[in-house]
Image (cartoon, rainbow, N blue to C red):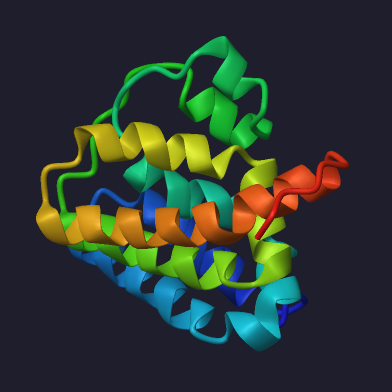
Length: 164
């Protein structure tokens, strides 16, 4: 997990493989690393420019995102979501990516980082196309966490007080 070693970044790079088994393994490895998000969140976020695309693109659906949505994303996500793409057919890959996202957004810094890349919108669009019930449950788990904590944080950052 140490950023200086660069292992996680190299593993994430393997996600572009055409081999489905390798992609599934990479998704599982990333998810497994996120089990330590409570103590390793800064290390995970230090490679955010690689981590967020690896986790969000498989669950983003295949629609083209609006210019408004993309303007709130870093270039590595905005560019990929500016055109139609192949959906990730393997539900296990999508589920593992969502499980990793969940463990990251459970941490305050992870949740803030997720909002900063327009992650909630990406999950909303991806959820609209999802048909697998298990994967839908994973989307919903993150959604319940974001609605409970994320909106309150967003309002507080904007200076609004919202009753809890």
